[in-house]
Every structure is written in C-alpha cells, then in structure tokens.
Length: 262
Image (cartoon, rainbow, N blue to C red; front, top):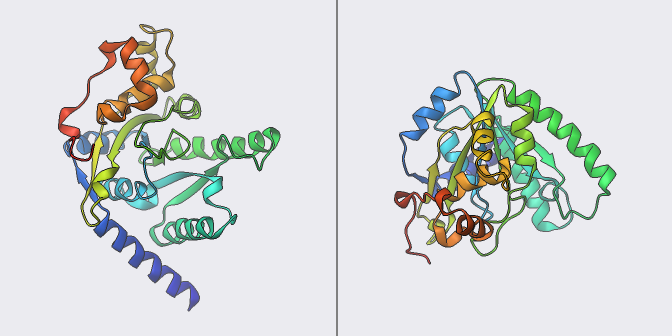
C-alpha cells in the first residue's frame, strides 16, 4: 500500500511539475539529430544550472527523445543526504521520481563538499565514474548532468568542471556530447515555459581538433563554449573573458534567447 501511494505521488508530482514548469523547445529539429545519434551512440546531455527547477524542463525534453528508463542523472551527493529539511525533500523527490519513471541516479561528491576527505571523495567518485562509463557504453542511453557543479545564483555561467571532459574521454568511442541550455528565468511567472535550446552532437575527436587551434583552452572549455553560445551573452559569466580573448569563438544563437528578463 505504501509503495503504491509513493508511486502515485511520484507520478502526480512529476506530471504537475512538467505541466507547470515544462519546456518551450527552440530548434526542435535538432532533437531529430539527437534521436538519430542515439541509434548507435549514447549521449552526454549537459546543461547550465541557474535554478533549482531547471532539471524539470530538461527531463521534459529528454522524455521526447527517449523513454525515461534510458535516462541516468548525475546528482551532487549534497542533494541526496539528510543534512536538513530541504535536502531530505530533494533526496526523497529524486528517489521517488527515479522509482516512478525508471530513471537512474548516480551521485558524485562535488568540489566544495567539505564533509568528505580528498581520499573519500576520490574513492567514491571513482566508483560512480565506473558506473557512468558502463552506462555510456550502451547506445540509446542518456546521461544528464550540470558541469558547473553547483547552481549559479545570478544567472551567470560558472566554470565547467574537468569531470565533464573526463567522462567524455573515458567513453569517447561510445558517447557524444550534446549541450542543451535553459533560459531558466522563463519559469517566471509560474506557469510559463522554460526555454530549452538543444545544441548539436559533438565527439571527443572533434573537440580535440578544435583545441589544437587554441592550445590555451581545454576540452572542457570548448564544451562549455558550445553551451555558452546557446545562452544569452549577458549570462556568459566566467566564459566572457574567453570570448573577449578569442572573439572568433562567439557564435551566440540569437533565436535562443531574448532580453526580456534582463
């Protein structure tokens, strides 16, 4: 009985959230390219993290590409523990939604989580990364993650963590990366759709070739540059300095954003 109520709550809460904080997709034709890619590869679906609700419209879009039992979400361990009431609620919702929709969750200990020693963090994350590699070895799977490692509180992009590059490197023969941005402020007023902008799939080798032209940048930088070009330039944050130094890398998608909330 308890399990049935728990599952029912999960479905109802999920449907409510997707209905009221769903996605308005810009360039929906790009989803066709992602679907085609998933026939032979897995996908690392990475996005900016500007608010607590921005995973919901991302999952809404992913559900239009694959069944959600093919989705694996990377979540910071600090969101899954029981440090306080908010963490308990977040952890419970993650688990409930995972059970209800068949999606899987892999926790990582993120930078700045001082509750763990460097040794504990390394050992824990090694196991999680091994699980991620196995998941990305299967065509049709999608790994959803936020490479900034934490939420931005001012709509400005934070620097991408090197783990993004490592995940792609370890699965370079079986996975491609796809940046997908969220114009999170479209959540307000409540009931409007968040604008979600898919990019195009890119392989590790393609990123490596681009890096040869800019040896001062990393593979992670190029992956985040692709994401930044799907976001309003006013939100480039950490990456504005890179675009100022290398203006030829800036190709903002003007269809993907508006200035209404700036």
